[in-house]
Amino acid sequence: MEKTKVNLGCGPHPKLGYLNVDVIPRSGVDVVCDLNKVPWDWEDSAFEEVFSSHCLEHLDDAVTALNEMWRI
Image (cartoon, rainbow, N blue to C red; front, top):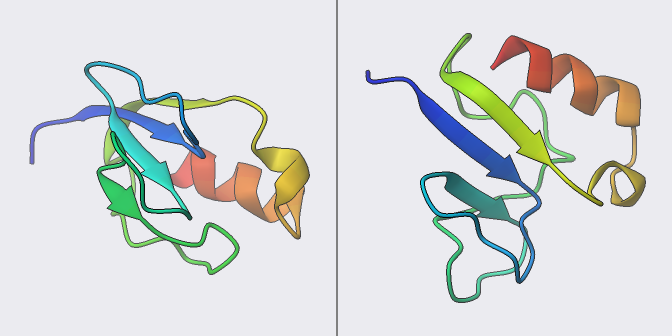
């Protein structure tokens, strides 16, 4: 698998060149998923870069989410 970049919790602000992920299906969202459900569906070291802005405060457990970000 070619490594890529992921934008977690993109909301209405998808980023060009990233796999844009959000819980709400909308324009620009590539993958709809609930980041509270772990483990996430990506393999270990699946991405070269993980970007997330204004997302952690909406998750049930920020530490678990940060561990998943590190893993993927």
